[in-house]
Picture 1 (spheres, rainbow, N blue to C red):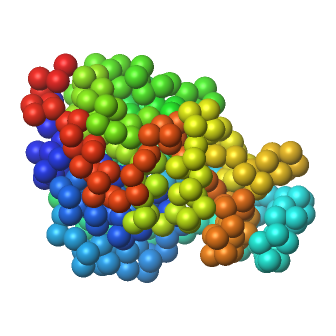
Picture 2 (cartoon, rainbow, N blue to C red; picture 1 turned 30 degrees about the horizontal axis):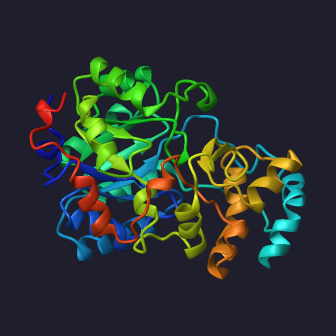
Length: 353
């Protein structure tokens, strides 16, 4: 199996988790400058924003960068599919608490993937990672022609096998411990909750491409364990989200710092898709209402009050995404986190098992 560093041109096989809505140029650049793969989530980005984001990243770092896109699963709701009015009414107390009014439905909840892909290929990052699906042959061919590596994301062995068969260059095996969205696409996310310790070695045995372990990794011990399981690299989210370079609000960072091992839950309340985070008022009230719109309608709806709350520093009305290893996220500087993680990489990863 080819080493991840050689495939992607890295100094260290550490990948920053791509945060949809919480990515920052400063954090991505810090990881890239430190020799890892800085990742930037492009969820909901228009082509113009994609261009500006990659331009800013190139100006901030000479290291390798990856961008991330959400692949359509085919079950995404459009404004014509759903009567959004009752869901807006259910969220009225949260709009009021954030000081905003319920918005009118947009023409589309998300930009077209084809337009996003055109913008990504025009910008030419070093890598494109995808979640929630398998890239089609045309996308993979375009990426290869431009020298852009494609990284898929799997929550099961079957998903990893499907991604390899399609032709991706590497696969992230993301365990149920991971924060943020469960990115399953072959089965419902609730039936694909395989832990990292069980998932990674089974994926390693099933595919021949580099496997990047994700979920529950926050320090050198988790990194060493991932390599002992056969991984070629690690992807880390929550430990970096805790740092001052991330786009998380101060309240979000404080919630991560205070979290215990049992303080995260899985919920569909904030986006309509299953995700792991720390409960707050928004999550509790939406779940209690029983009125959760399908994705991406719910994500658009809550995004209105979440944006206002984030600007005001109100941690009770934002998405407090975090993984089960949040209690191990003790450092507030990205360079320090990277150094801690690097200390767990074996001198020769091929001999780690």
